[in-house]
View (cartoon, rainbow, N blue to C red):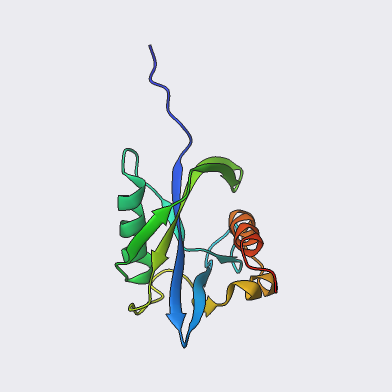
Length: 139
């Protein structure tokens, strides 16, 4: 009997910090096709059999040069990335005391969540941004 495998696992980070009493979230500009120039929440693939939390730590260290505290993870969601259905796991992380480098992304920015509306996100991050915007208190 053939072993059934699921879709590739992708991990993503919603990285927050508090700066001058304001919560900011890290977004990064994608340097390569198919979404080159779009903004994203830092993400990357998990290796086969790798735990999502381990993959996230590895990916964050490789792409941003940080070791962050994972606060909590969200349930997996299946969304396509460049026409490949992937199982996405997003984790909330705290970066209040961390310096972020741009080892992979062409640019990184700390932004307030209401400002997400001003950015062109890749399709997966657009859905995450919309979810985070829906979670904001009404002004």
